[in-house]
Image (cartoon, rainbow, N blue to C red; front, side, top):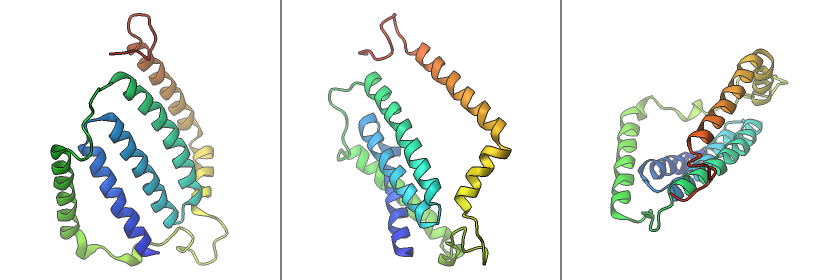
Length: 173
């Protein structure tokens, strides 16, 4: 299982380097979907299956909206692809920086620290991810409600700012 987690984390870092180095919204959105899938795979490997499913569905729903807006507002006839020289050099630079960080921090890292929430207590009848979701809705209900209203207000402000000259939000730039 640790080898699968290692491959998922390696793909996660490669996807993050792709997102960070790509100026085109098309390929950056593709990299974000890849990173979301691999990050949820890491969560499943660590025991958070319900949390992983919820985050993946919410994140991909948000990514569809972000990709639609970025594709509508930044319509490039010839977007810079993943194989161009500048993007490959940026990905190699980010990969080198991550490798340098791993080299510096490797002596303090132990594989045995990858335990799930269920393995930390001997005879636990609760799952860590579902119990955490229940806690969010009980003790953090007010903050969740305020966060929902703030997101709605942000959506309305962004729609008003990108409206243009009375032609709607989706327009040619």
